[in-house]
Length: 110
Image 1 (cartoon, rainbow, N blue to C red):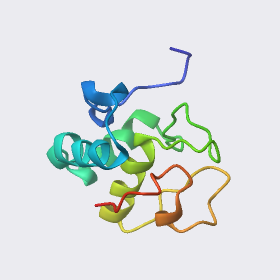
Image 2 (cartoon, rainbow, N blue to C red; image 1 turned 120 degrees about the vertical axis):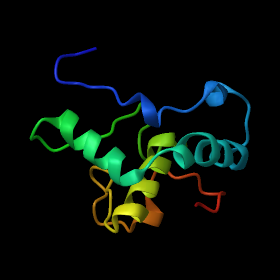
Image 3 (cartoon, rainbow, N blue to C red; image 1 turned 30 degrees about the vertical axis):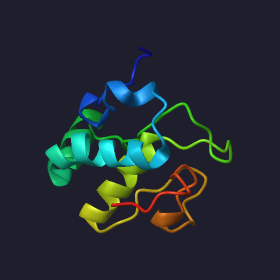
Image 4 (cartoon, rainbow, N blue to C red; image 1 turned 60 degrees about the vertical axis):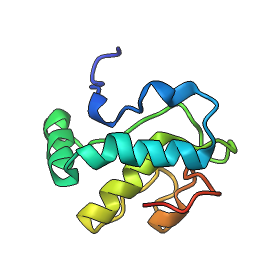
């Protein structure tokens, strides 16, 4: 892992991550099996602590406008709803949270 990067495995998806799950099933499992067992305020505090005074950034391998979506967008939406503030996508800070460019378009969230 490159210097400066830290992992936050609590937000990682389950073993079904690379399965053939539909977006709806994936979201249902991610919210139900991963996020439902976490306290979003505690997660935000832990992520901030890992940043050690710097601005924390969640990263993934999916590019905006790629036609793909990622679990990071689901985590960002979940955190935003709990914290009452936007968790923006870099370069898309002007978009409302529900228009995060990597959210699954066919899934009703939360």
